[in-house]
Image 1 (tube, helix red, strand yellow):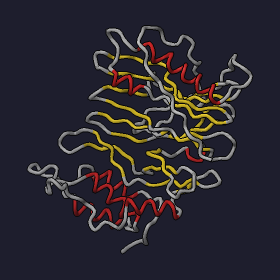
Image 2: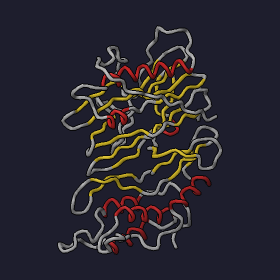
Image 3: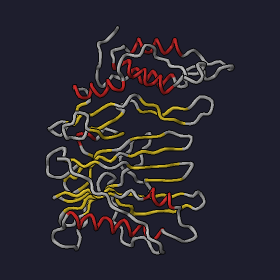
Length: 358
């Protein structure tokens, strides 16, 4: 059963104060943070657990409300990522644990914990990593979410709660995004689970970098949207800024047994909405300047062609024909990163939409 997330109204009060003086202890294990016994009542109601999470959040955010170095209202609003999703087994919440205001850069740096509270009040947590090209799931950095206007912006989409493995406790799909000024943008969330008293990556989705969540076949189980292996970094022609290069969004279809399929009929139908046919050409030209190559569209064409059965040799041959050596007169009239495009061509497609060859 899909359980509705309960959003917290995390208002920011005016006044000065200190950061919560007794934060949860950290663990030397980067993938697990053990629960800490609580002195509360023997059992907590789901509503009381969410009130507790709200109180922990306000203890960190309320002191930021005013003063000469107070962040802007927009930055404070951006920092209010808290949520609480409760069930009969306990509650999940995203709770800020430390905040650094940066007046010189007009920004905030926040460390969030993904916290699970059980009905006895025990607390287990993990620090989800801000997405980057390394694909790390757990953050060892002091701050794992950043908002610096004009430079870096991180966000978390509404978490999705669902008991994929039918153990009575919901898993959490936590989509994360990061945008860098003149740099790459990432969508690389993860699926988290409570196991043996600690928060771990959900084993049957541990390698997925989740861009979004949808219920593609309307069966009530949330499916995972991802780019599969087609998520890399390149540079723009001329300017040299880093950009993310992806293939089409694909689907990991949630199965009744708690696993996921990236190549069954539902996953294929979803892929066809992104790649409706084999591209007629691989190297795409910029619609506003036909002399330049559209690198993002070309990468998409490479992957779609492979999904529709084009061989690696065919795609690489078309790339070589469409990406001649750059000339000083027209440096961007060719593919910016031929090596990356050929890498996409070499990868075994995770599913097939058509037969090999023409």
